[in-house]
Length: 297
Image (cartoon, rainbow, N blue to C red):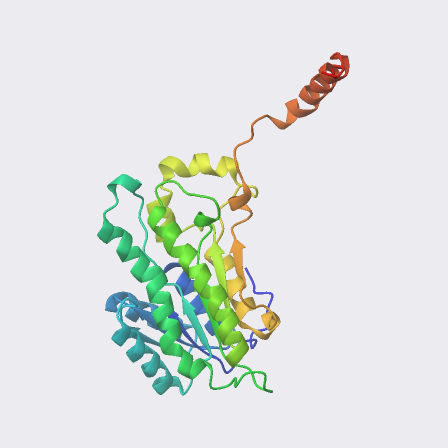
């Protein structure tokens, strides 16, 4: 699909994306680049990084890749500094690195729980903390210039509860809290906007293949309001909007991009039967004798 945004809406911006070499993160990287940004991606696998950078450059996107683990502060600092050294500045940070797998709570080890928390929530905070020095340079706070932008990729799992996802639900709840608190503090002090995106089920991603294999995917679609999976493009377009001037007054918000799935639940009654049942219930209600209150006086 063609973008609804101007090709130069991110012209002159420099973006650093963790998890930007594959899946949703890579699509965001590509769309940022197609809309004028220079792109640095961070990941743990050199082969994935090299392939992603090669693809981005094939679209004439200024791109570079840096190996690093968001769980390690020294890696976070090195990659942020390398990005600034390579491109001269940093305007946008996207935290898309994440860990996930299906597991019943009683079968989840403490180490497994901690690993996802470390990648998703601690890693998000660490990257934000290391990037602050550069993101705030353009925004002294309540001045004429504005600071940078942070975008955290979250989820909707913790809005209610999710089967076999206690570790990710806890981690993403923490990510949302980080988003709101940094939006308050850094928005006030440095004009840095901090927002999030909560993707729903997105087709052709590692997350879907791991969390919703074909054995259960067909059943899940029965309860989707839009009865279809989202596309990585949908998340990337939301990201372009939020980090561009089009979203300049949006701060501290995590936007669900899931077709309304988090609101959905199985029907208790077929739609065709609602009118008939409603009439029957109303009829019984009218015909029922009205009980008169009795007094003990």
